[in-house]
Image 1 (cartoon, rainbow, N blue to C red):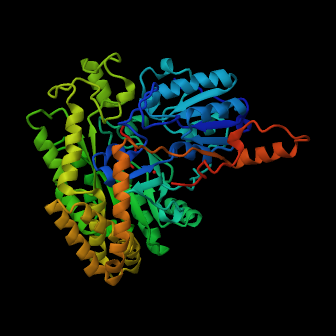
Image 2 (tube, rainbow, N blue to C red):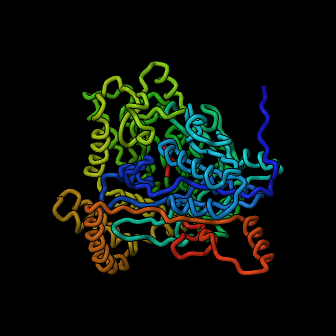
Image 3 (cartoon, rainbow, N blue to C red):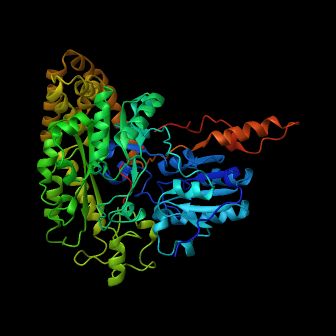
Length: 592
């Protein structure tokens, strides 16, 4: 029987606050944060063992940004607050609706935030969404009025009685902020960072462990915000104009699976002569369904691909020799981030070494390793719950369900307590055998330029020319510095020396002159960074506080009606140099 969608009595006049969970994040605390699970996707799950070479960055709460962009009510977004900032915001401002978004490991923080809202804003309606909504007993754990599962844009539009026929508007926001590597923080000008594009949500592949697929309906289910290549092109073209960028990170679990839309986008790129770089998630089988020329012409510059494990039974890998696929992509300048799972059902103490060796042998540019985790809402969770293999809550804390520490179930072969060690072994072996990911990325980028520098397709050539620019200066210096760092490691020193001289031969005098100068600076920055990290230094994202047009208009109207001066009570409404300005930019969404 159909259920009636809730409606807020104020409609689009309701004042809304959307917030991510509070920090700090990279430390152990009473609310579930932990040092081993920082709010840094790459440093947490990809370059975890790479030390000074680890890629550091933060990603905005893109789901909240999408919702804010698509509701007509006055809406304020508070991203990455600390607890005191969150309290100040709800204590000194009146809101009719307060929305919170979270993954399951942060349930303790959401519980605390709900309690604080009841204390300071007892009349506010509390709405909770994100992956936390997949929890079996979320309604009992959280004191919230509404739990939103799936598309939050549609839910809020209905809740506020907005016109449901309008197209989804896309926020202009970059993909990362505070990007840092080798002790150096990179420029945050939007033009130098990829814009985020969200064309779809959900994944029809429906892998049994996938939280994202489960959140949006499971196997065979997805929702397109933009159905055609032309619609998607218009969005990306607008983002190019606003952010002055020519690169785009497409947040779609399997973008190339929607073949008609992807090829329609290619038609538009050719028609309008766009040399854009596009970073995508895609399954191996779907990638092989395209000709390499199509991928290159489409601008595919970076692929995040599930490798999962040798002889795994996932349909997205059926019949694909993934090592050959990775090599073919890299030869054409397409950088690959491979994702492997430790602890599949068939993994045993006897074969796990071979499992890790196989994963490492792919020599991808970046490698994510995750523990096989039965997250709430997934078919795997249901299967293990039915069989009685899930660990009870008194043995396993929800805050540990992030895939980088423990199994949340009894593995049929691997004894409890050794899984993190196996995971760290995988990270370390990949790093030791294949070298720093930055080295691999630069090598693949150079391969792309060598392959296409003389192509007659000017649109393709221009893209590769743009991508190779850093190799003429900063990247050449980085290779110089890495070579010096590895001066006592004969094998890696030789590989870096070969790459540096390949850069010199291919790109001429400029990198030959610049590399030693920039390299010395980078090398000393690396030494300082290495010392800081050894002392336990961590970084946290900056708080972002921003209002949509309706909220800004309401504030302006409110200010115009003031007839006498009043004390400033809400620091949240003051521009502060300590707060990040909106529009700064952070990879694969967590499998948790």
